[in-house]
Length: 61
Image (cartoon, rainbow, N blue to C red; front, side, top):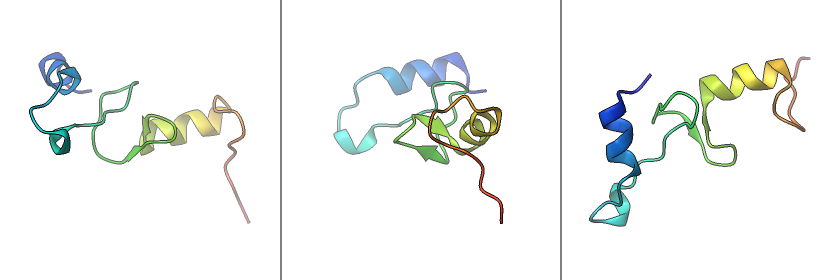
């Protein structure tokens, strides 16, 4: 979990567009972010396994 101050700083409009930090909306993690879903890889995997993301299922072969 990211600190509240770090999340607040990420929400603020940066001086330069390249400084924009994308964060997971569930946990606030910035690394391993999947843009299509707005989640980090860990939250994405948890939600996909539970079936909470429509159209996504865990593959096995």
